[in-house]
Amino acid sequence: MAEVEEKNWFQKNWKWLVPVGCLIPICCILAIGGIAMTALGVIRSTDVYTEALTTAQSDPRALDALGDPIEDGWFMTGNVDTNSSNGVQSGTADLSIPVSGPNGSGTLEVDAVLNNGRWDYSQMEIILDDGSGTINLLGR
Image 1 (cartoon, one colour):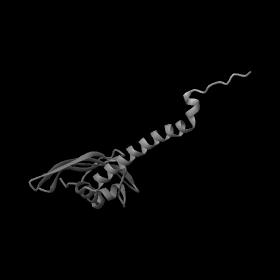
Image 2 (cartoon, helix red, strand yellow):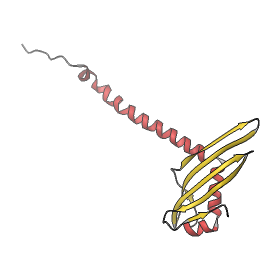
Image 3 (spheres, one colour):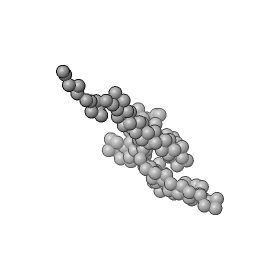
Image 4 (tube, one colour):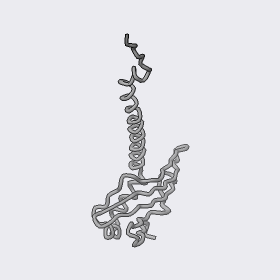
């Protein structure tokens, strides 16, 4: 008489284990991506980001070097830290924003301090990717 081989745990459960085992890493990747996109969206909505990008998009030297329109890239780095105490806003910003236009690309470097609700910029310049130099957007 033939002996029936007993199945081990994996042989009994592989039909649900394999899909679940694949879904868990995919869900983790999607969650991390969602968190990253939310953080980038929050930074993009700050005054310091929009002011710096608007300044770059309207500067004649930047338009000459990069072309019109100048657009921001997806993966900026840096941070914006703000807080409010007794109605007084303060904070710091340190951003590196990739920018590009039809004629070239570069990185918009921004350093600023928030005092009483107003951003004071210590650095706002475009470092051109072709190595031809930098464009100081502060007019200094």
